Length: 270
Ligand SMILES: [Zn+2]
Image 1 (cartoon, rainbow, N blue to C red):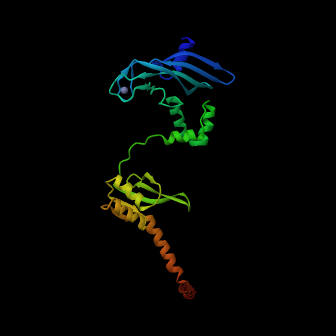
Image 2 (cartoon, rainbow, N blue to C red):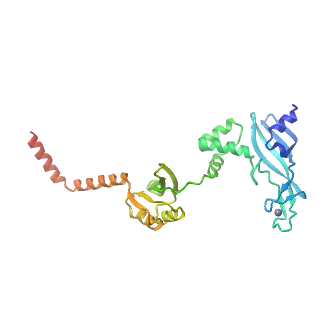
Image 3 (cartoon, rainbow, N blue to C red):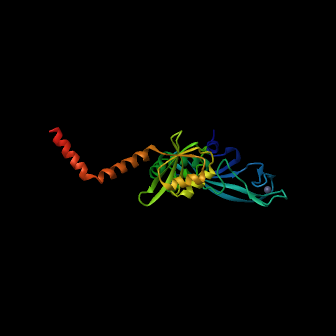
């Protein structure tokens, strides 16, 4: 295998790219690869009609996975085409190289996947430290944004739902957490703890049959408006918490009597 063949093999999307040249910069531990898209046919992204009528060429610059400890930059020559479908609203379109990189992306798909995996495993700062060992450049925000962009699988609406508030920032900002109580799994976080916000969520997710909540009137109202047929129950934690607070209040207001009882009990026992 020649060096050119090895370099071609290392490219993403080998079948649709033609390797033109590459430059090694040992001082900067950097490789620049020049390649041209040769995919054929090319489809209009709007009407999906194939077209061979080239309008122009332009260059995309993409960061790719490192080769050993060399950072890699791809300079890809890609084309714009005329759409030949007279009914189509798009007259000129840029060819998509979906397997290599998303439209407008500055990184290859496989580099994005690697950074997303790092972000998921280590999050921001620790992830950045690891990427430095992998000869890939990524900021903390890049890793976090990639994790945020992951599309989540749809979550079925639970029949038994737990509702409680929690602090984004204690004594300042609070939200609401919703939990599937059959699976003991959090399923959604609401931006605040207002009745209307909970109502909106329940209306958008019909099918809740029972809601376990604290004893506040706000959530009671939100549930009544959003899922009027659902049975509302107070959860064990808040019942015990309320009981404890009530008992402390009762006994706290009867301190004199409690002292007398204690003295009497002491005399009887001695
Ligand atoms: Zn078209």
